[in-house]
Length: 432
Picture (tube, rainbow, N blue to C red):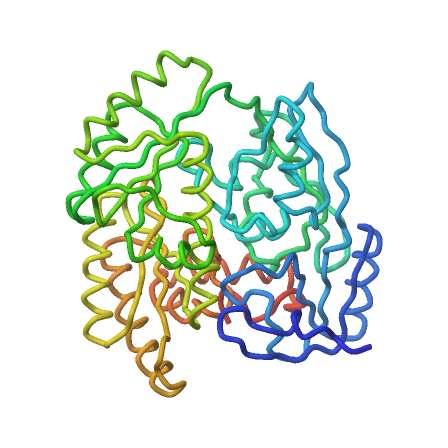
């Protein structure tokens, strides 16, 4: 059976890989059977979610067997009493949101791609725009079922709210990018929807003038649901792609902030405080709110419509966001590369999109590699990390291995050898 090219393609580089076969299990038992067959045939296995990843973690670079979990897509149970939603790994974020739409509950993580699967989100510990208040994927999973490389099944975590019963195996598998086991179903933490929300857009002359306001907000005791930053040149891509106009507001750099809660009077007080942080403050109406959030959410996909890009998701201490972006811009200019920057101001997550534009393939590869060497060295120098929410995969592997401590890397490799001694699962990803 011919394999659809989409399962073979590195979404970022466009490179086409090779796989010996692809499977589409519909049950956990079928996952177990596939792992047994792959192991018996001495092959290697790569598990795929919704194929929305940006680190090459599901790229078949050595004729591996592919297993897509897209048909493992049932919403199993909503348990109001434990505030838990049990779903299979192939269920998408959009499907979870739609399922909960008519209930009093919501699943808090809000990653950029709503087409991403919850299993893939767990595999990379996806973050998103509400992480500053509600945490990342790791903070919103209570328990999971995982199939190991020897085809045994284990339960990690539980629907209990507290647990100090031995090692926390759940957190080992979250963020492991399919290298330690296959997540088949999950118990998600859900919570009551806040009754009220307020959104405000603050305009600033530059990132330099914006940066101190982030610290001021976070140290004030106010906990915004979202605290996003972007520049006018970034949002212009979305305007062109969506045919929507960004609100008329003075500034070149912006903070987009959402407040939520059950006390409307308190929210209004917090909103009033935020308006004092900039001469250019715009409280968003329902209509402008929808447009602005569409524009913010579409930046990456809009860039993809115009040019090849290298999408990065570095993270630095929150007091280093603005200096880091200024330094990275200077490096890009020195290499004659175009780049846009945006991200999650509340947790130090910088999205840097490096653009190919009119460069030849040879020029692009040469300039990009030189730039990335400088970029990741700088990120390490300021105490940052190469990935905040996309994972390492193969695209960041070199830089991850260069800047992680030798003892930490050795510990990770030993952990891999315990769960997967023959390197059956997603070999060559994260590290060699």
